[in-house]
Length: 148
Image 1: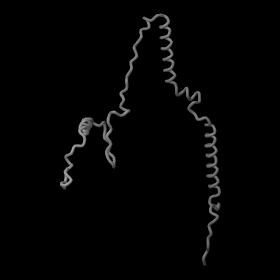
Image 2: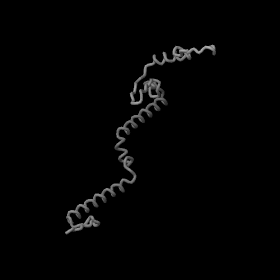
Image 3: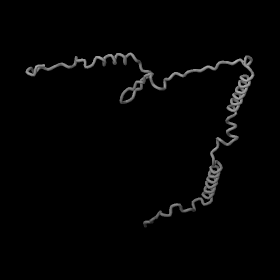
């Protein structure tokens, strides 16, 4: 621009960077997985999140034990019996955990004794309240002035 001329320029039609429009087109093509609406704005979640990793299903090939030689057959039988025993332990796992004391706290007997003593003290307090029935002076700081 010529410094001698005082013309105003309209900058609303100026494109600053050609790649910006390409990025906006690509972003508009990508659809969000979900849109969360908050009081201060919207949040768009796309599918590139780490939680969207597809789970890979692995299948185990079945082995025919009749076609195996002696040593692989023995190994196959040992592992299959071990797996069945492990599945059986999983089925009765809760009972085993209770039997070995894994599920109970280490000092459960102390906790039970505390609750027993607390219940006994509450029972004695209720019994004493019923026996005294208003003879106790619970508030000794009350001063009653009889004005005549």
